[in-house]
Amino acid sequence: MADLRPVYAWEIWANPILKRYCRSRLRKKHLIPWSLIVLIITLFIVFLLFTVSQRMGENYTWEHGARVALIPLVILQMFLLMFLGTGAVAAGIARESIDGMIDYQRLTPMTPLAKILGYLFGLPIREYVLMGITAPFAIYCAHAGGVPLEPALKFYSVFFCSAILYHLTGLVAGSVVKRKFLAGRTSQFFVAILYLVLPRFAALGFIFLVYLTVLPAWAEQALPFVNEARMNRIFPGLATEVPWFGWDFSPTVFSLLIQASLIVVFVVILARKWRDPEAHVLGHVFSLFVFFGYLALLLGNALPLIAEGDFFAGAKVMMGRAPREFQGESYGWTTMVLMGMAIFFALFLVMHLIVPNRHEALRGFRRSAKRGKRRVAWFSDDNTSLGFVLVLLALGWFGWALFSQSIFNSAPFRGVRVAPWQWLLQGLALCLPLLAFQFVLEWRGWRTSLLLVLFLWVVPPLAAIIFGASGRLETIAIYLGCLSGPLMPLYAVGQAAMEAHGSGSNTQAKVEGAYWFAVTLYALTLPYLFTQWRQYRAKLLATAQEGRSE
Image (cartoon, rainbow, N blue to C red; front, side):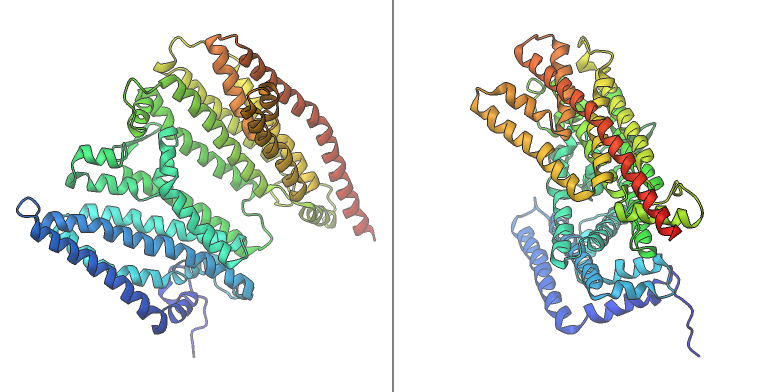
């Protein structure tokens, strides 16, 4: 009799979802053309560099050529597994959702983790095979180039960890975005941004973003085989140990820690969606842990560097500036603004993910009414997220204030006078717009909130740019820009920077006036929004109790 027990998550070889995609995505009519293309490109790279090494003479041996050949081979492997593989995962899971196969899989007795692993390794199985075609050539080049086994294994551990992270990102994107093409391109765009854009933000204090890629591990493991000055020019500051609060980690270990943490977050998100398709992407409690981890990544690396004085020195190297051209104080003010904006947008995203809509809130009240209770369970997704949002705002406020105080205590700010209540100004700029957004989002729903964000947070800055470009309407431009919630951190830090230098200029007075105008406007709006939110919740409770009495 056949064994009908459910497959465990660790039995990946027996996973029926993986078997299904091994049959469908490894058919000869698709696999053979792709394999030939990859094989031809790989052979071209290896034989071209072999020929070049023969003609370059004694100064350029085959050992050097083999090491150089590893670079395009690794890039090819990254393109196959991380770019094409991520697109295949996102498009595949979106197609499964459209065809109804996701709902069918929910009825099977497999655990959510087993289903996640089946899709995670099944959807990109063709890309794994294509990468396997390049593996013998990469192994030969590493051996001929004198690359030891240990650094190669360390690099490829980060390589596969990054691939799994990007594929999980594709699974999440495909689960949220229902259109197959859009899901695939969105996830591939994410990978391209990681490698082409985000490393540039490392010079602005967001060094941890680079550790979501394989670049730090490559820089560390390739350092013994490449000239150190040349390595620092290509990967500035990435081949050194990474401080994180009181510990020092190698780039490889730090990359694995960050990527493994995000892998756990994505697995929890997908497991929640598998158990309940109507569940929020993040639960209320889990959102606190996720945001706290985000702050720990932002601050854990920056604070030790600031305290030791390496924060500004590392930025100078990364930005390629000469000592006379680099202004440490200006850089400090800039990083404070960017840190405030990074925290603002993270809070904005988390709030959007945990705020219940009208249907969910009414469902929560009805469930409570059936149990004879007036309040929804505190940790339920259907309960109001206001309490958790207040905790998130307090965490974000504390993190930004801690970072700013570290900057103020650094060497470039010696002699700079900063108001002792600057932390309060930053907190108001961060919390008031987001708290107003929280009330509107829960009261009126996402569509109305999106319109308000568009007309109050996006249009005014664009209009301010137009007025500012005219050169004669500076006051209107400054006051229009302050209406935008994401720009409030800029005004909070900008007026502090002007006040610290005691310029007393007309522009300083305008910036300070605009800041307090926006703070007053948001503060006066909050009581009205809070009242409307309370009435909205009371109506939902009354509706739920009427339905129960009937």
